[in-house]
Image (cartoon, rainbow, N blue to C red):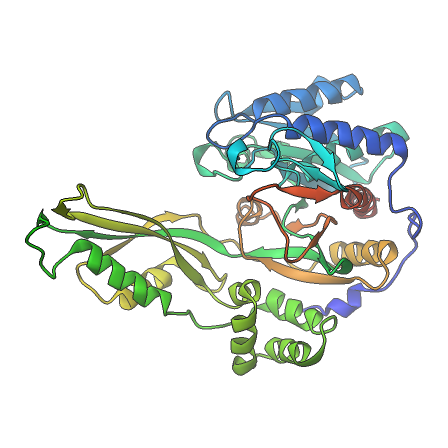
Length: 460
């Protein structure tokens, strides 16, 4: 394994510490595109990504991109993607710049502001998708237009792909569809995607994460069927009781703790920026100490999830009448599987934990596993250089996403994918998928500069 320290050597950059923000005209352009995307309702089940794809294509054509370099299409008419190629010298394979334009559903009554009205308030941009993932989508487009205006000629082609249904997956997922139907449009040496963010604690920037791996997403169904009967004549053999017992046993179970190269590097770096006993435990975790792992897991749910496979009940169904014994009781159990585990192992473990032959455990959704991306020296060095120049003292933090992204499809297809964004957020106030999602205004524009410089560095 290559040591992270070997990537931290500084090189010359066009960026200076005082130039964290893009030129004014590029800020305005990015904000305009961002607003347009936020106010386009592109929820998985109630919206469409097609208007965004078509608006981006129109903007690119107006800027002089030929029709032959722009593709708009997808699995169905409401789930279109847009892909554009910016031609370089062809000395190396392209870089794919990926973001998704669909969002998690949001209801007005759940928010304190309208989720589909772009609002700048108290130093934040509010709206569904402001952090996941329309900020990166808008910036990829704005930066591409800036490269063209400046006459930048990269050594390799740059491909921007803004895709559908990352949040919902299934047959309309844009990356999956493009790989199966239009692979030549997005085939690349590597991809830059969501999955890495800057971490802030008490307003201080402490780390810039680069995503190198992801856990596997899987849903399992626990189901009990019963002959039922009249509720006035209860019996111990009750479907709901069987299910409740199984879920209680699951709630008291934990998968074994483990590390891989990415998480080992993560905990090693984290130990350098924390303090006291917590920092000492993090260093011991990186060394594989199980007692330290147990202490860290008990203190921090996010780190617990980085140390093991996790399974949790997320949905329930059962019963057919208030005055009848239930004939069916079922639960969805969502698992995020550590890369070194597999779905069959998790299934077998759940059956053992359930310990009830009346409870049938089946795999409902298995999104498949993908290998971690290697710590490429060029990617890691450029990421670290620009991080250190923009935010001196902020460390580069290799990370494994405990959620999931479209990077999985690309990694499975042999295209290494790196989670890079440069948007700094409070570690304890990440609102993606939740109420009043927001992005700090300075973080948006600093991320615009970070991604502009990173892509230039990797393509010169």
